[in-house]
Amino acid sequence: GVWGWQWLAILVALVLGYPAGHGAAGLVFALLIRLARRTASQWDDDALRAARRPLGVAAGLTSFLLLLLSLGLPGRIAEVTRTWVAIPIICTAGWGILRATRAIIDSLMTGDGEDTANAGLKTHLLILRRVATATIVLFTVALALTRFTVVRDIGFSLLASAGVVGVALGFAAQKSLGAVIAGLQLSITQPIRLGDTVVWQGHWGTVEEITLTWVR
Image (cartoon, rainbow, N blue to C red):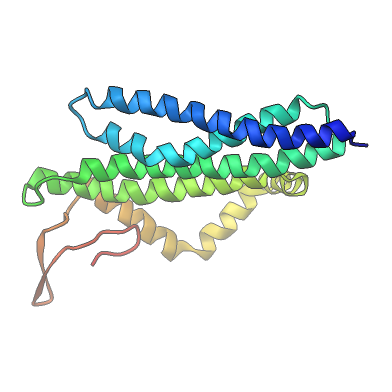
């Protein structure tokens, strides 16, 4: 049910649409980076540079998808095309957001590690970086999977029984969840910080890393 001109138009949309969207995103990011250089902070420069490449790819694919939607393709082919173009858009956009988030946190973490207040800030940011990474990856994967009708229907069914599943998992993973909650509590209350010297059972050492589940 696809006309010959539509096959040709799909090829033209790929050849012209992707470079147009990618180029437009490049111009926007170039302007934003120039504006960011005028600010005193460094985190905005780092975030824009980190997100520029993946979000440029997402913009190019989005331009290609918009052109595809204007071709009037038959229903089934249009649905499949939208699905398999939308998934890379979601993944590259999530990648860009993840890179930007990490760049911002890493930029804020740079500083004098000997300063007590700065050590406390680093402890907060370290936990925040891990939580943000896990959250962005989870939402990106979930959003990409919802593009499939079967997965979307299963997801709605699981949401209906989420309360029962949550209670069951809570009982089954009490120790693991307790460790995660303890890790979050350590990052908030900060009885220990990165760089602290601690003594435990006659042995002393320096706190090198604090994660959601253990301290080294």
